[in-house]
Length: 54
Ligand SMILES: [Cu+2]
Image (cartoon, rainbow, N blue to C red; front, side, top):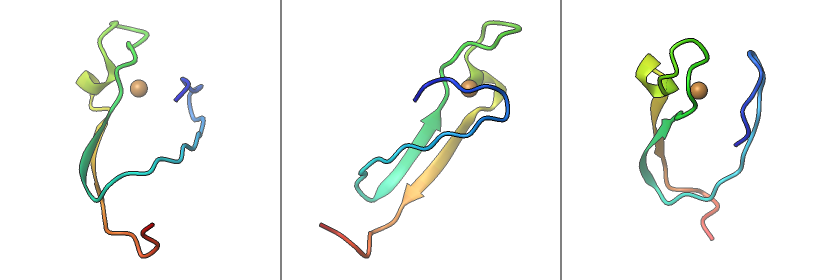
C-alpha cells in the first residue's frame, strides 16, 4: 500500500484464510525516524469464515 497524506484513506482487497493477523506499519516516523509501529500503529484483526467461500 502506498503511503498516504495525513487524514488520507486507501483501500486494498486481499484474500485471507480465516485466522488472526497483525497489521503493522514499518514506515519511518518523520520526527524520530522510528517505525510507526513503535508509536502504536499496529492492529490485530481476525478474519472469520466467509459466507461466500470459494
Ligand atoms: Cu504508519
